[in-house]
Image 1 (cartoon, one colour):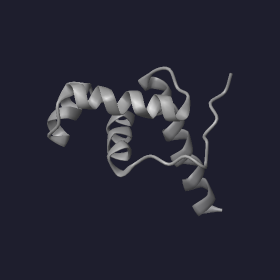
Image 2: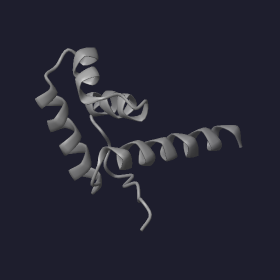
Image 3: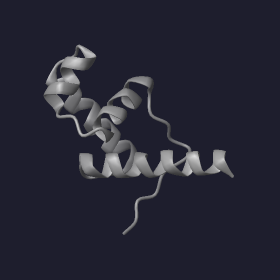
Image 4: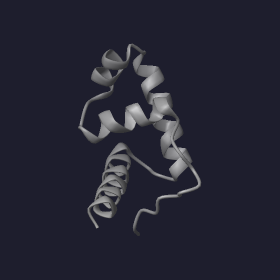
Length: 78
């Protein structure tokens, strides 16, 4: 089953920050430190992102948004 990006749903600015750090493979502890928030808050944001996009784990978050960014880059080149 492929991942489907729901265009009508957009991440909040804070969620976008988390998504970028998840794409880079950072652990929750490091994300919390970089964003000056608790690990519990990081987990809450990740849960919100997964619920919003019907995902089941952080790997799917990374794959989905990396693919979305690649598609946007491809459109800019064309």
